[in-house]
Image 1 (cartoon, rainbow, N blue to C red):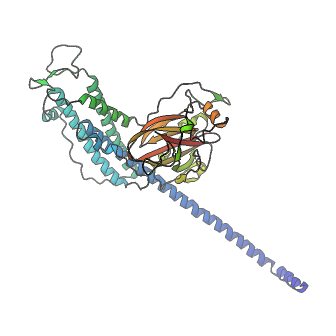
Image 2 (image 1 turned 90 degrees about the vertical axis):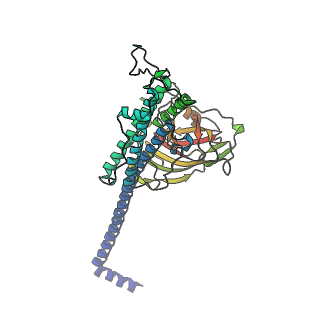
Image 3 (image 1 turned 180 degrees about the vertical axis):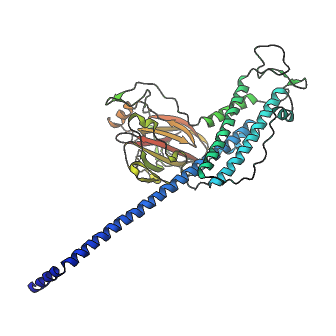
Length: 466
């Protein structure tokens, strides 16, 4: 053994430079491998983020085009062209699990819809003039001196940069919204009665002619004779409300008024209060899931626990968290997309089935924003109560219409009751600050939330009851 040791020592001495060289080369190879793999992973992440941005841009364009289709349907309904139940505006569009259409295809449809909307708008104006003056539609069109729009020209929809295509779709959608707002104003004037004086009038009546007054048409006969539809006033009022709901679907909801409070010298909350709604726990039959009715949950208090979640994104600090940053998921949910999140990490949509109550997003972070998307299945059309709770702030959309905006309200007592007292709120699925009565459609319904967290813990709760 000693002889072997002596020989090894001699060998090591003679070849120590070789051993050092091998060690250095091995270390170099390890370093190159590590940084090479890192560069490959970084390049892959950058590619994912670029693809996610492109998908989000297409999703936003697709949403604008779908809004234009709804605007067209609402305009047609307001003129009695289609029954309300037949409108595409009443049909849900689910695009979260599929890739958006190409930009050229979206622009081509937007141009066609814009032409159709202009045609409907012109016809509505002519019908209104014909109704007021008691003349034919042809005569009204001649007086307006606005011919019906020509069919769309076959111009290439893919001409221009992606930014130019996006800008044109945005411009066409804004023009459609302006047309819808003008139609709503026209319906409101028809309902309320607007001073109108026919050209033939020389009465000098300073009060003018009200919309429901008798007019003399161009043929000398009373205008509007036999022209009013039965229940037209009621229909006009309902139609104006439908248009208003579409135009104002993201307006903040009113809140209660209470005192504000300060913490660490910074005013965190504005007037408003978060309360825990009362609940008779003895009558609660709890359940979880996303299906209500036949083949679904028979519980009378259903905790919605299955979501696609993404985050955290960078959030604002302090009281600013209640007016947080806007990120691509708000423009359109694309489950295949990836984005740059908080601390420059790559975030993707992940399916999350919460096995406990309430829902706590994974990858916890302070001063952060999270998003969630899910679909509810109902066996029939019905109105349900939505119980909402969040730490710190949440906004919720049902079928693309915002139904809840928490906002900068005083939640001191809410948090104290949840965290600092003995209670059964988690057991009863009632970590709720408010509730709303909301109408759900038969079949699939889309739910989307934005959760903003400031300091310390966070959660989101959405529970449904009859």
